[in-house]
Image 1 (spheres, one colour):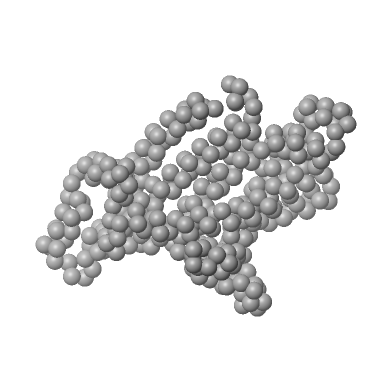
Image 2: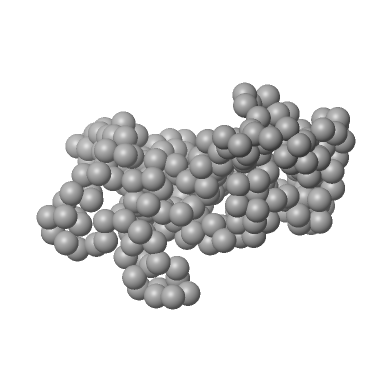
Length: 314
C-alpha cells in the first residue's frame, strides 16, 4: 500500500509543477498593468518605476517564476499589491470558510445522492427509479443562483428560519455558524447530490449483474446484506473518485453561491483579485486550489486501496 501511494505522490509532484507554470504564464497574459491599477490616477513615472522594482516586474519572466516558486516552497505566496498583506495570511484566513462550506455541501450531497442512487438501482424500471432520475436531472438543471435566491425569499424572508446572508466563524459561535451555512451548503449539495446519484446508480447496476452477487443471493443471504456488503462496497470506487473531484471543485470556490450569500471564501477573494489585477493573490489561490485537488486525488487513491483488496495484494 505504501509503495502504491508513493508512486501516486511521485506522479503528483510534476503535475503540481506544470500547474504552477501554467498558472504563472496565464496570469502574465492577462491584459492590463497591475502597477497602473495600483497607482490610480496619480501616475508619476518615478512612482511607477519604484513599484515595478519593488514587485520585481522588471525582471525576466523566468526569473520572476523561479523567485515565486522558491518563495512558495517556503510557504511565502507573495504580497498583495492592493492590501499589502501576505497572500499566505489571506489564504489561511479564507481557507476555514471554504472548507466548512465544502464539507457541509458534501454531507448534503452524500446523504441525498448515494441512498437515492442505491434505491434507484435496486428498483430499476419502477416509478421510484423514474422519480429519482427526474429529481436528479432537476438538481443538475436548476441554476445555483436561482435556487439560492428562492431559498432566501422563502426560508429567510417569508418564514424567517435561517439568516439570509453573512458568515460567523465556528470558533465564535458554532451553532450560528452552521445556521448561516445551511442554505448555501444545501444549494451546492443538491447539484452534487444529483451527480452522485447518477454515478451511484450506474455503478450499482453494473455490480448487481456480477456473478458473486448472484452467488450471495443463492447462498440465502439477506437482501440487505447482499446490497450493502457485497454490491455497494464494490460499487464505491467510481463514487469515491467523483466525490474527491467534487470536493476539489468546492475548495476552488463556488463563486456565485458565495456572492449570493455573502460568504467570504476563496471564490469571492479570487474574483476581487482578478478585477484588481492582484496577480499574487490569484496565483496563490489557484496554486492552493490545485494542491487541494491533488490531495483529494491522493485520498481517493488511498480509499481505493482500502476498498479493493486486489490493490493491497498487488
